[in-house]
Length: 454
Image (tube, rainbow, N blue to C red; front, side, top):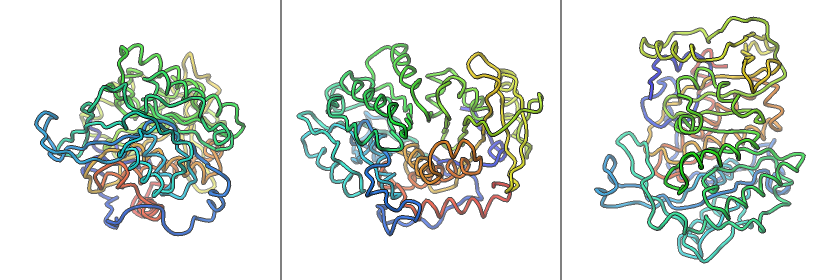
């Protein structure tokens, strides 16, 4: 994976961190060691959310991550494991609840001790659990090994992957009314590996599409250990599912495997990724310590120049510059215009030539470097990022509000970054998730520390 050095300063944005070698001006020293469950009154713009039913419905797997107690060792050399509740959609649900958002979770849990433990964690976090299905199967566990920097790798299961409860979500029990009335449906793609759960996920998406208010957000979350199909068959299933999404979040690993797009290209010009999904209003690309990028369609900008343009700045390191030049050579021609806003922010709008995206469409796009935190475990950081983005999407009054206001879009990504970063400061995907005041605190640091950030 390429290292970007000073490239992280080339544009004006921030994301979840996975390592401690991050932007020095964003050090976070005020994190509480207490549990980060939702606390205090809801902010004024969120008042009444609990009374109106779920604003967000999350769909997918819930499980226990068995995290290695011996970082740096392969699975067969690890001597002890610590169990932590997780699963990407489960993590998003708990993270949203801790931020004060009314959220419901649709999953299947075993009628067993671990299933009971996850139910308790969901309820304690404030997640609505009426849609959780309990069946006579085992609740999933997955072994997670870590390197010495805290980055993790999934290393298999305790049972055959297609025998766990989350494989058998019942489509007939999808909470149609909740989905029709919510603002965002959040899913991953791992459940697509199992026919029953795939049918339930597809029904949930179809229900959302029939709603005048509900947007579909999909986090690709590619994990080969969950799939028994060939890679090409898996790729076809996931791409078809993504074709119906309004918002798509992808990691660096997802990019390479699913689209054969390298990270350098995606971070420099995320619209190269966006053009692969013509229905989606926006894409978010996260790459841990390397930062993140985003590209959202907007009708707010107009093209005025045919010269490619990169954000001015302290340039990248020599190696990074060479990588950037190579990536630029493979990019489509960009038409670029700068637009002055009342708040003096200048945004760049890209018209991307290509067979899928028309020249008439314009974009808000940017790169986001990382906050500096003391990273312990990166499990669930991307899920907290997703939750933080959804929170700010709701705060802005919906997706369309972000598509016409570059500042609000930037704020959503920065806040998402703060949520992801703070989650890495503790072991486990849920234990480190911040409450609203903690996330807001790190978010505010970026305003005070980066003179050109806003």
